[in-house]
Length: 162
Image (tube, rainbow, N blue to C red; front, side, top):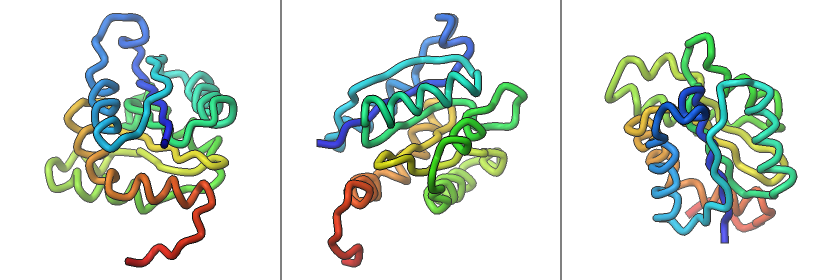
């Protein structure tokens, strides 16, 4: 069983001023492919809080997958990718490139996404945009590769071809 955690990064959401639709969409989509969501939180756009929460999910709770939603753009408070880059051990640029490539088919605004994906220990970390539509579209691109990626992180030595 693959375990996951979802972290919504939103100042308004963390204060209860906005309903979190993106986090719920991510949880639903991951559940559809049998990833058990062990934890979910809404936190403010604060780099230290984001960094510490991801570390809690990866290092303390040993979750296989951590998905963030929100804070991936260019606004002054968008610091999710910065926090993620500070703590990952390996970046997986192909996943972020795939998300941006697919999003570019829908909106030119996709080119300003700074979302990153990477590895910390045996955990996969994915940054998604904050809008429910964009989070859904970006995650959909990665779904076919998620289980395989996590199996490899856990030490699966089988060939990747096929």
